[in-house]
Length: 150
Image (cartoon, rainbow, N blue to C red; front, top):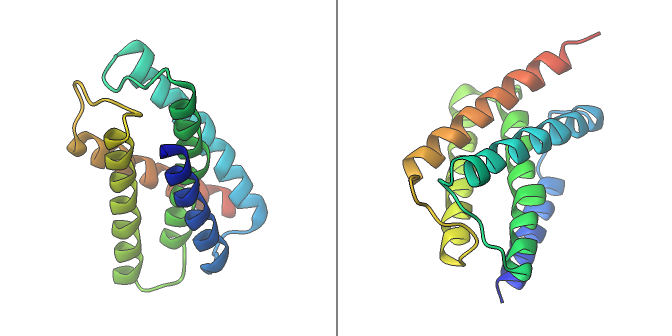
């Protein structure tokens, strides 16, 4: 059942990603996707394997759900955040979009925990808030750096 739920969430996120205006080119989006993929896999592996703060499930179906979250939902939301922070929109609108995306990432953590994909041992939603906030800020700076290359 959880596979259907996360697949539906991923489809919704992909549709929203296609519909919303983009302030990054396709090359910049691909670059950000791969940087986010490398950093998020490294970070989530450290939190799971090394620190045992956020252990993940070993069930096959739930592992596929976790892969959907880590390779589709989280990167696309962070790319949308980085694009909106580098957009020509007014500052208040950029921060509102960033706050909504951060809330969606926290909601994704909540759904993952309720479905049994992850378990918060020495972790909390405050740590998730800080982690995703820093992650969005770093990706925004990397996107700004990459767009200004000649």
